[in-house]
Length: 406
Image (cartoon, rainbow, N blue to C red):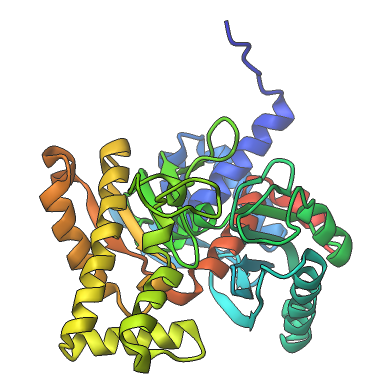
């Protein structure tokens, strides 16, 4: 029989605090009466917790509405500018960082090119310099209110240990204690997560799945391909914290060898790099120095009706559709969300083609129930997703995080 851990009175208060503060974030503006109904806590407990939050500046009153029998209800909201978090998105070709407030508004974002195939000390130095540069550029009042850092990185990695294990093509990034390194450098509590999972959580909190979609899979289609699995509104990591490596599942048993050691991996056919390689071979005039600019020109060429461009995109979406169908048949989620670089500027072209594949090849019942959605966050999804990882820890135990601020 599995042993169950009971909660002592202090931990009950801690749990209720997280529950109520999270409800105010998710449903604001909301009244105290509505909070009591939503959480099943007594009005007395709600009043006590709200008073506590207001005293610490975390919650504010934002107006009144008339309730039953003409009674006025005071509405509550998170004081979004009380604190901020830093989100860092590590990608194979760039490092992006940004500052978000307590309700996910990004104050600023900074991106730099960085080849993570370089040796670890080089990329780590670029990471630190990027963060320091951002901190120097932002408003000093915001800078002093930053209380935590979230980092999204390609896996495999261990969020619980704060260790990057061995991402393909990351030279020297093996068993790197990134959480510890960044905490020592910036003196702020730091949390790491697989980038696809971070994006998925960002989509749940602030994007296309925030209203009523609690079971979905986010497919991060960028320089790599990964999946963030959300079950009952929470990240699913698996027993070894490695769930979601969809990019390294086989879609072509006779395909080329992947950097992971497998053959015919989905990532070989659906990453941004694979798409750009095809464009470079067959539409070289579209190629620009910046990969996102190349994609923008490519999608423009598709819209102009260039037959070769349309053929390339159709083939690309064929393979992406196979990946989506496999995910759909495996998990039967409410939705599959497509995001990251491949969708920036081209979601309107990609989604219908993938939907066509799903209708043709998906298990009929699942294909009727599962929505295929584009990320509503866009180019900043990685940064906001990383910031959401830090925000999640704040809302779990706000006072613990607040105590650790500089």
